[in-house]
Image 1 (cartoon, rainbow, N blue to C red):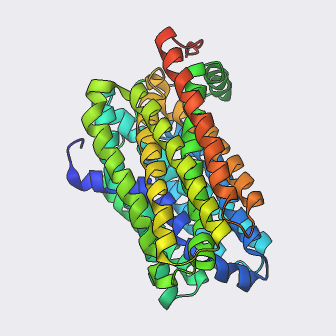
Image 2: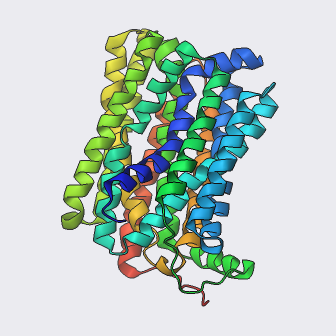
Length: 409
């Protein structure tokens, strides 16, 4: 199973589809706002709620992988995702959309947490696991571009409601594929299934400084990526007046940067180590954010529009996403190194933590939205500086060891 390319493709799709389904609707957000008679800001808030539901789902499905097994958790989650996507399609007001989005995200999270749990079951060696996460990271690099490109093409043929129905069908297709292809990987050794044990595990993890640092860094790195996708229609289409048919192509720069990050991770992980690569990634992200702020400020005071100004923004964005890509795959690889015997429940609690951070930071960006393009780069620079500072403590904590020990089962 480990070396099956067909299954590796399935794993990539299961990991990518939550990101695809969220970025897919970015091009039609203005149409959603018009249809539901609300401002763009309120539709953008649904992205934050998506990640709130995602966080709850990560916790639920992750724990379920230890209780029910990996396969049942995956199947039930995909069913919930499809139902939530269909509910989004039939929402008549923004409140109904919010509720349906939470249900959709709750189900979608199974693709992330259950797949990561299966991969950790299959690859127990730290270096081997780091390389497989890097390979998958390279494969996933196209999802940031695929979502908006596919969303734009679908918007030419379908209205925004039918795009959600398309996502429901995607969930059903993944359900059938995983049902026919995956086998159970949960260890045969008995595991504690009591709520008290999960609570004890959560307390242990909350006292683990290394894991807390990883949680903050994954949350910040992902927040920068998804804040950009939420704001991108306004920046490039409305402010810079890039034609909508060219809008999706902007994601190629993001994909290329994540692709390069995956190549670097795969080649350097053995020599430099994950912690060093994480620190390097945070520094690159900070430099890119500073350049992005400078460029955005220059464009805003000169009132520039068009492709020349768009390309001027893409260059620093490449550095931001390069740094983010270097961080995320390495963080996911090493964060649960001390929790291999509890990887399902521990992974769910870890996912809950970093997705909660992501949701809060996304909400912050939605409230900073304005008619100017400078608030987002200011926000990115603040988050990047915070990530760099945390990355410096990460290495020290790893060297001296965490404070936690696993609860006995």
